[in-house]
Length: 518
Ligand SMILES: Cc1ncc(C[n+]2csc(CCOP(=O)(O)OP(=O)(O)O)c2C)c(N)n1
Image (tube, rainbow, N blue to C red; front, side):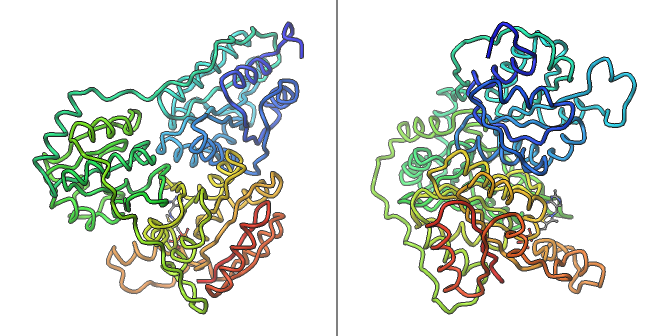
């Protein structure tokens, strides 16, 4: 590649590569063709085709959750971006850095309002910051700034680049060494104040952990604090990334339903939040408060963009908590071979079978919650959850995680309804030989919606409500679906079958799917 004749598209890709971007999850169109060609001419960025934009954006989220480094997306105009917005929303809620690149019509074509024209910047602004490229000369510098801001602000940065600017001669990207912004440090006064508060609260204190507080070091520091003061430990309800097992304390997630969380937090005199936002009810219910903490009890130790792990280490030192050996949670008890599959049984079976270092992408409550409860005593593993609640995230996130860490096993513990939003992710898993074992909880219903219907006072469901929460007619065949996408698949109805298929899948390379008949 001759640097003297770089195009805007080449300058953009080179600037991304210079800033540590190694993977581009793409679903391009006509307005991105110079960028597609640039991915061949500029070395360093691996292009991965997603068959729906929400696969690309969810994969970029999963990739950066594991590496800490932004991946790039490449999406087609406003409609392509719109298709990818749900998982960009989830990435924003996970505080994940993402470089989101969108092509636009040639600038001179825009005034004619051609069919695919839309307000791309307005759409992109709903999930983060926006960098419109006004000339090829700024393509590289704006891309660099977008990546820096994605890391500094922990979120989605969208670069919009019209097709003519992709083709015009461009300036060379800066060669400044890439140093992603570090998390902001928490001031000593905040830590001192909290130390006093937690000592005073004793067992009526609670530490709520999110962000990098859920690293191994963060949780071990939290354990020292808890041992010294008696404070309880919880993780936020939907952590972006939580280390778990391998001798870590059992830090369960704050309960999802507000009544349960309210009852838990009502007993507390000090709720210290580290690396998460203050706890709020997921939905508003009549006569149930939205704010889950009692007035005057909330203390923010670190916001999500701050270094919660370092703050916890400093707090543990300040409180004087020693590294006392605390008994590790008991190993998960494997269920009996002949047991039928239910959420709790699957949770225990998967937790008991986890190889050391597995990444588990969890989406959906049927097996997701029981697995988390069962996995505290499992081998060391990493859990990724759906932080923003826009379903269709679990499979793409698992795909991105597998490409980020090709040497680690990845399990997608996936409810069937959510999985169908982005089932195309299976095809990319097959094409990229991604080591993902997909476990589908096939209850053939939108289970949580039935729970919510009941909570809204509907003891019995009418035919319409039943139809709107059922996936049973026709019954979806995940084995056939997976095979159609090129992923070998099996069905399990008992623990014995699940265990056998899971062992085989984990031992083999590439993706596998197991439909679990619940
Ligand atoms: C993008 C988006 N669309 C719709 C919903 C509403 N919704 C929440 S859960 C759910 C169904 C979940 O069913 P499934 O994934 O099968 O999980 P289960 O509760 O049965 O384990 C739906 C449609 C949502 N959260 N996000």
